[in-house]
Image (cartoon, rainbow over the protein chains, first blue to last red):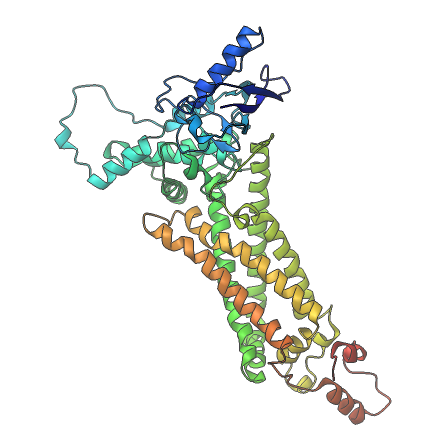
Length: 248
Length: 269
């Protein structure tokens, strides 16, 4: 299989980027998208040209490192991370446009690599439960309704890949923040700081320069972990409630 | 001064404000449409309704309502434009290729349709509320005159107004744009206000489209029916004008400004 790639190249954060055209031959259907880029990078390396920089780590769909816009869709044509996108979803001779996540809060560092540390700072603003150290409590002492436990686990699946921001036409981080707010807010351990948490994390999200949600659910459609936009509604409830009736 | 970091100015609360104001405006649009549909009843129905609105609370209620509506529009539009500005800033460089998966045209062009609706609203007020763009609209107290100061012959105003095919087509087009705005907005507000949860989301997703279809169908039925000749005029303006002229004699000027244009506004009479 032969593919024509139109890849975004950018030497550094301050440099102007441009698209570069490459042709990759010998692509097999069972290759992952990243493996296809590895083939291209090996070719570039052999030619003494700079390789295409992209984020990757586990290549198992778990870590959330890989991140690229493929033909206008976050992570590519199938729902899942880029590393779990296989070349069988492309056709011989197809042109593939590859771009980095585009958001002011995710500055491009090099080629397809963006700085997603804004997510870390949002987490640091309140995405935790403050607990004293000590002996592990008896699990049965803290009953959790099954529905809440399952919803909390659904929200906790978020791997922070940033596809929600990339797919949103406003570059909004609402789905990410909603998942992080909700997975703690649904559990008893997260209740004491529930109000403070949502206010702090939303304030940080706004401060980082993400856009505002316009309820189009593009984030939900591309999320590799299928996080539901219901969590956004839940965060809206929490935020509006905590603003109008402060808990502390 | 409150910054964006203040909880009251957070993106979510401001979206909630857009949702609340939008919801109240939807209620107004539905109420306004219900009132408009009285035109399908005998003329006294809609004229009596208009007179009631103008007389309610000794004429003060309508101004309270108008002030409230202006405030709602101002807040709805102002906050939306501020949010849109931030959204534009949030993605300074767009994608060369972008392939939206689930969002429709209406949801992606809310500001555009909103601005069109706003401009239409200005025309609508100039047309029917102030009667500045259509001379036939000023022919409003023709029969009852000063004995009933709050009497507005809405029926004739609307019927003669929509006999012009260009005006009727323009209204229909604007109603479709309004419908596109409500299609997304009518459902979106439930998400913004955090009302969506579980199976409710499937229900609220239908609210916008249903409201849009009802509003477009209801409001468009009026110009369409008038264009089809299904709503007869309450008065024959030509005869009425002649009668007034005969009563008053040749000396006094025309009692209604712009009445000389009436003939042009009533083709076929």
